[in-house]
Image 1 (cartoon, rainbow, N blue to C red):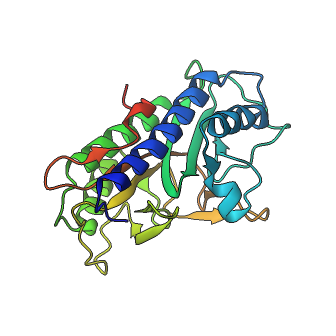
Image 2: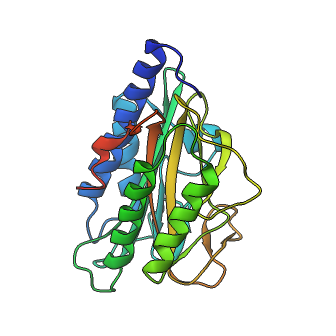
Length: 254
């Protein structure tokens, strides 16, 4: 969407604060021995208390209120009572919701407790690349140039990017134009970021794979060559200068 009046900015700030708070609290609440269903229930309760509705559940009938992916699951992890978290797990939580007709989206990967499996460097790289990408976005910048930046920074650290997972426009629905904000320089995409538009910028940084494939459950995605992936995401408003980061309070850069 494009912000055209103050009430729209207020609505976007309101829902963004809710999803950011839910993500932050879920990261802090996660602990070894907990099931991903218990963690999802905790996040769902936060959304409900703040008058927000889970976007994946209400939009796509996803079997959970948040997506919680663990280890080799790249995204769309289904909350389960049988999936028990362990120290050293690489966890990704993606929280998106609707409130009063406005939608916002954010996500983060993190290592649970001690980094026993050596995932922290991947996580830190993803966070740093997201920050660099967002600081380079302004009205008139080509979307493909940001994709080039993300892939270049990933390669510098010895990683790959996932080419079939992308950021997207957001605001009046969960996925809007621009429909694809890729993590690589898609030369066929001549679209430029527009001032006052609302977009969800996501990094998809991988150890082994360049594409994600969907498992037989129809939801969970893993790498076509295996490995691990870290994702970080903010919803922002594009300006002539530094973007307004609506989900800044999720604390993923702290």
